[in-house]
Length: 280
Image (cartoon, rainbow, N blue to C red; front, side, top):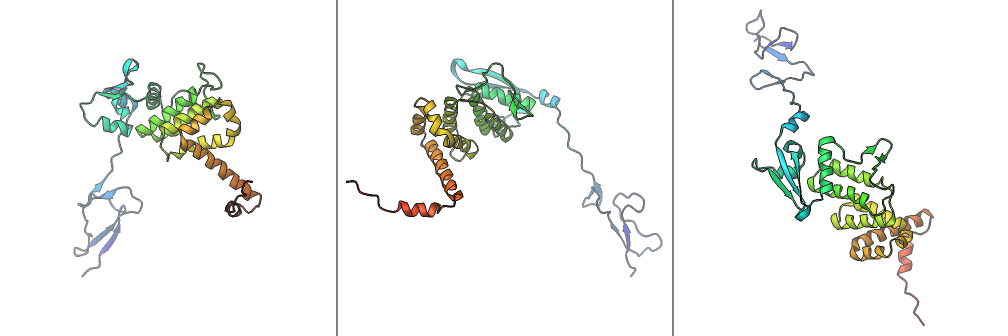
């Protein structure tokens, strides 16, 4: 039996997948070894199968898609907005809502009009006003004061955050959260923001709740006097807020004790277990 001839692919003329026998030895079996690093894959039939590049979706393609009516809010404040279907389908929420080809209108009675308009602006442009600037600040809004005294500016981005959570848009969610920390505000504004956060987010949403608790944990001994009694109302209305702030304060105190080289938690536990002195 003749030894098989080994031929490295690419050294001879281009082939189309057929096995070529050696010219001088009819009984010799030819084993072809493809070149290492080739991008073509060999199909079961032996033919090289070329991958077709994915077709690029242009912005014009989005604009050619059907228009969908979005009915925002309810009652006299209800507003009708329009958006291209292909852009809305970037949100898994709208993928489900538009699963039927007959759907032409979606009612969003519980959503905020300004937050929804920010979402649509983001879909079309990749940002929403006010934009983040390269230097780590926000674009100036001539319609708003430099310092947010009512909480309106904080709440704008907080509502975009909760809407992005609903629409399953994580990048928009991260963008809106980053803008919250670029706003100058007063204690009443921060408290209005905290109230919204604890009434519209879940307990395990540490991304937005933890900074709120940290802010008040560090400053509540001063800022609570500037809130005209509403800080107490906030703690009573949202016990989770009070607990998170207290936890931050106690954790900070524990870390401070450890840095000073004291006995730390174990000694404190031992002391707390002693009986208190009885009153006379």
